[in-house]
Length: 233
Ligand SMILES: Cc1cc2nc3c(=O)[nH]c(=O)nc-3n(C[C@H](O)[C@H](O)[C@H](O)COP(=O)(O)O)c2cc1C
Image 1: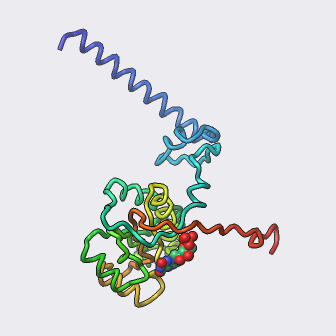
Image 2 (image 1 turned 90 degrees about the vertical axis):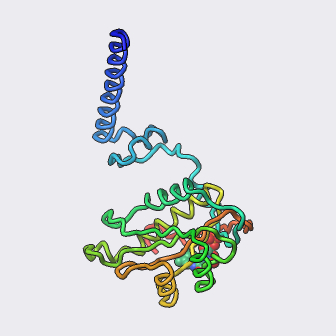
């Protein structure tokens, strides 16, 4: 390598390091002042994992459309599988959910094994897994596992929030899915525990078959202003 090359590389490295410093300083300042508010999606996303607590200016892609057009899909195309990258996206969405005391008491079993899917579908017909699903998630929660009372009491809410995120992410990626209840039905819990080898101390909340839709049920408009109370019941 010539001296000129070495000099050029050193200058480039210094410039990159300089940019990093500026960016980090910017993020630190943003954390302090909260000035990410109003900056939009890219800037907000750059704060992921860095403790940035701010909201955006409302320029997120249409979250209301995603939420209000989600629907339960119970028939799946048996010829199409969901690839691993998409599975990870759904799991990332699930784990982005809020949890009490930020305990994240969830565990996710990704079921792809045909024999296990068949066994689940037979033991839990309402899980709809038999309707062509090649993939199902079992969302489980930690029942105690050393958690303080105030955290372990919330495992159902925590795992429910994760499940809804998973459903929304599936919908957003053109997949069909349905939340099917396991907890608190004893027989369903036992079946899921046995087939998926869920250890004591953890419980299955639900099973979510996911796949490319083989049906297109109508979206239900559930908006009901009569359910809303202002300032008192
Ligand atoms: C806790 C819970 C348990 C559910 N259990 C089942 C189930 O066992 N089987 C099923 O097909 N759907 C199940 N569902 C889906 C509901 O039937 C569905 O969400 C509801 O009819 C509203 O329809 P939508 O999801 O299309 O808006 C369950 C949903 C929840 C939240």
